Image 1 (cartoon, one colour):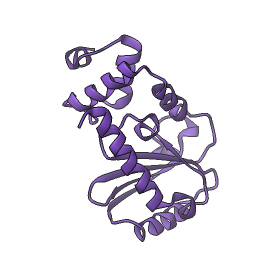
Image 2 (cartoon, one colour; image 1 turned 30 degrees about the vertical axis):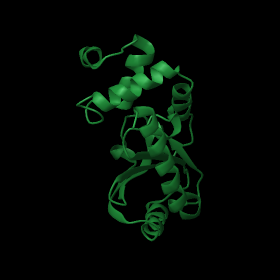
Image 3 (tube, helix red, strand yellow; image 1 turned 45 degrees about the vertical axis):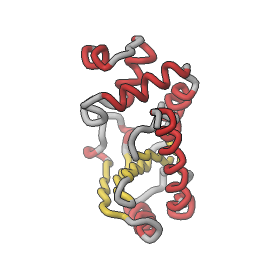
Image 4 (cartoon, helix red, strand yellow; image 1 turned 60 degrees about the vertical axis):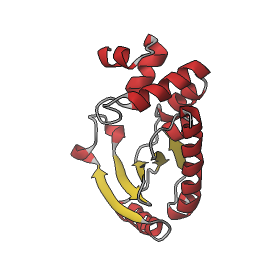
Length: 177
């Protein structure tokens, strides 16, 4: 199976998983798929979803997670309250609740509940990647597949920038950049 076919197959799996999760009935906020599931550049069973949830509480999110556990085989769940001095950056608007779920033995699902509604780059970036040339998209898929450090120390955004902004085409060029 080619990398493009593999990405399409993972996309179809992600869509089926989203159907089973039925996030719109588990949480009162609109779910927005982001990352490689939106860009169509999946090589791992890793699904990212964000919510604009200014009225979210820990209880709301945990109740929704409990609902999800009734719909799928939830192997582990890591819930983080990242408000105040626990937020991931120094920006006040980066307060969130964050959950990482390991589902059905093979999927990692990241759910981010943003407590401040502001423009975030996630969707425009994924749409920019969807509009990349076929050659660039195949290069990104290949580099994600070949990179020994993906996604732990070299993330998707690193690979996207290397290919789209610096013209990187090989794993050696990526590792040197």
